[in-house]
Image (cartoon, rainbow over all chains, first blue to last red; front, side, top):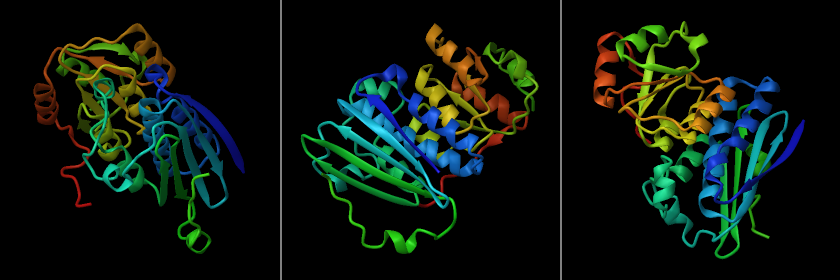
Length: 154
Length: 120
């Protein structure tokens, strides 16, 4: 139904969020329900903030299918050495600059997880991080398809 | 309550969105941590904050915030004001500290967009 790719520059704090605003606008135009558009904008925004804050560069991909919205955030950056630790609420390695913006309290990945219906993360130290977020637009339609489809970094 | 009344109560200056002063709001969320705004603020609420940067606007846009009230006399950069115009989000600034903003609005009927956070 829709496929798009948006580049995000690492360290460009002034524009952080611009991609997510665009994504939201596209989804709104497609007349998807407001609460789903909001969720998609939210997970995209937290991902975008992460790329800007930590990575050299990255991209956010948006796929809209009849039964779900898929958002992928792929970056070239330092990677996450301990994903389990990074997922813990309150754990953060944020710089003062990130905290000045109102982020860096260790809530980003938790927020992404709680607003996604399906969330997957993989990361390789020194290479980058991959986030996959699915928001279902029809309840439970993805259950069988997603079973056993492991995510690998390549 | 409409934004114009809120402006009067808070002796606020309207930075953007003068034409939206008749918008009605009933609830608010207050934080300086944008991740918490993303986690807890509900659509159509006021965002009360002491931060005055582009991320406040982006966060408000993503969460469908009705209007932003910036307290503690913080001022916005011209770029941030321009972005607010682009996103068409009304912004009011006031010299009141956040506690006073919340108290004054609560006493006139504005309520929290949620009362407590749920158990996650």
